[in-house]
Amino acid sequence: MTSLKPINAVGLQSDICRVCGRPMPKGATKCAFCGFEKEKQQGALEIVMQKKDCNLLLITDKYSLRYFTGFRGGEGLAAITENEKLLIVDSRYTEAAKEDTEKASSGFSVVEFNNDNPKFKILDEVILGIAGDVKVLFEDKSLTVAEYREMSTEISKAFKTYFPQFEEQLRSSGMSWYPAGDELEKARRIKSAHEIALLRKAEHIGDAAFADVLKILKPGMTELEVAAEIEYSLKKHGAEGLSFDTIAASGINSSMPHAIPSQKKLAEGDFLTMDFGCIYQGYCSDMTRTVVIGKADDEMKKVYNTVLKAQTEAIAAVKAGLVCKDVDKIARDIIAADGYGPYFGHGLGHSVGLYIHESPALNTRDETVLEAGMIETVEPGIYIPGKWGVRIEDMGAVTADGYDDFTGSDKSLIEL
Image (cartoon, rainbow, N blue to C red; front, side, top):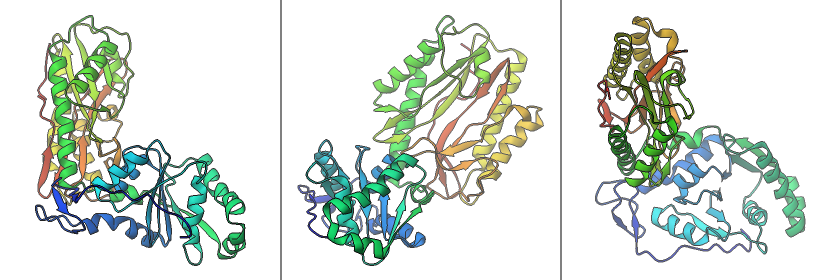
């Protein structure tokens, strides 16, 4: 580093354990309550950099920023080298970023960029502190081509403007860019006890919203009205936002797994599929329930029970050590055995965390071995074009010997 002066967070006299949420003495590396070692979580970035043989990591994805720095603002840039960890934000977020990084005990220093201290000037100062060739690791899965081009060219421009005396040094040392792929996302796969508690709470909010909407569903309501009632209830019960756009699909529309709510009115004899989730303290929930408006006929009951059996048996099989695609096969085989194989086209489930679709996924291709602490949805479905569809979805945590199901809502066939 040259003249860069970070804005260090100050104020709290203790750190907060990321796992159990209890106070830790300032500077302590291990929580006295739950035994969590900060070094293990904080070392994940260093491990990724060593694996990719890079000496500068740039984090731009808002979910990665929150996970590794604690910053909730979403707009910023983290720069990590062997010697320092900086969170670079503009004046809108400076104070919040200081509070967030301090609370998370993430070890990041906050630097504000502005007209007098532009972002790429700050990055150049970071680069000047690196000896030898600069190997930049960047998040190619979230950075757009335009953003990548801007970043790589503006760094060079800033050198010409602010550090012309070092421009030749930069050219001679060389700068190369390397994609991080899914390495940072992999580091987020195993959830801590604290994260699991937040995910469980988010799912319980979904349960409460489902109980609320069951009381008011009736023929004549539109799908848009159903979606609005669900979203209102989620907020009423403490959600800070939606983890994805709410799906409320009835009758023929329920044959489309990701149907968009419309002005179609609920009618007697309709299946109604409701797929929804919320965000609680940054963490997402996801659940789906399918009910019948009125009475179900024999075929509807058969399809529903097939989906329920597929989901129940897949959940019963989940545990650490099982391969993702093998869990998918359990549900898929049950649906195929009842003659509905062609009507189950999507994967059985996916991981959930700060983002609604994380890895690994329960599908026909994912060969990841499940580990305790991973979060997975289990959501088989049958969708008959031109007719109707059924999906049932729970969310929970993989454990050493099973599945900790967060979703408490009834899964028996509900006729309204």
